[in-house]
Image (cartoon, rainbow, N blue to C red; front, side, top):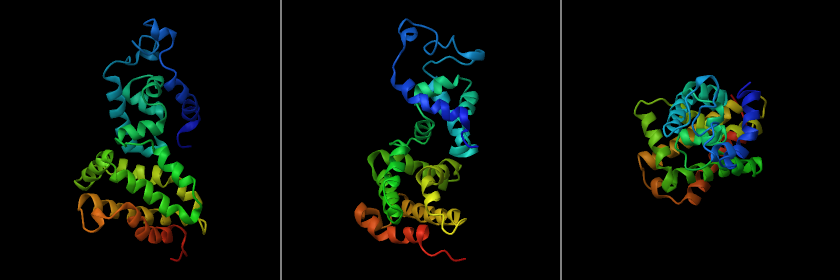
Length: 233
């Protein structure tokens, strides 16, 4: 089962851990996270390089396994740190994924926008959220990741973002007739990728400078058709 019960339980407590600040042991120079001497099994202590080591392990694990199958425990093991340190630096697995891909927003922001609309408005919500992210000043890291894929890099991180994050919750809402969701979502994803490449990488005009609202109104109907229109072989 993706993520695992241990990982889900860890995620439920991670937000409180991440926001609690240093505990009494840490304030007194204690051992739990600051100097690492209290970690299990001789794993690497938290230090100035630990965050980067976790990120490197996360990128490799997400690229190999995808977002759903990668667990915080497996990433911690790859980085040779205690899982508590992963939660200490990043909070949840989604936050870690966002940092690994250099996303300027929490992926939950995208999911929340899609979750809030009726099924016949999903395409507009996804386009507005995702293209808005690409267009933001901080979105250059995502565009850079796409350029890397086009240059021969590993596509798994980008694939995971589109299919397992941005469009993940869409799949369950558009599976009519049953079994059609994968085809529907893959067609929608292909259209979105085409928009990104034309708008931000090839910079084809007038699409490249088209206001977001106009782009959404022009492109959403076709993507919505992929998601909820008649399904024929």
